[in-house]
Image 1 (tube, rainbow, N blue to C red):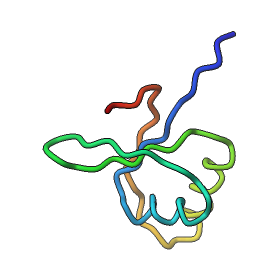
Image 2 (image 1 turned 60 degrees about the horizontal axis):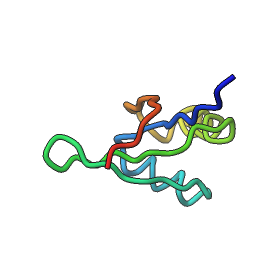
Image 3 (image 1 turned 90 degrees about the vertical axis):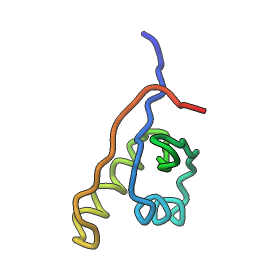
Length: 72
């Protein structure tokens, strides 16, 4: 079975910074003439952190995608 790394790509900088402050690393992609997308490696810990952030009610529902590629 192939071990493929997937990424969670987040469009909200506030959420990305909160995750980063919690110890999660990310890279940045630029799309659509300069829009920044924050790319985190998908892990069970990251998914739990996202559930906690949204469950606390501190953030509105945000757009993020799951993808298997990074764009440079």
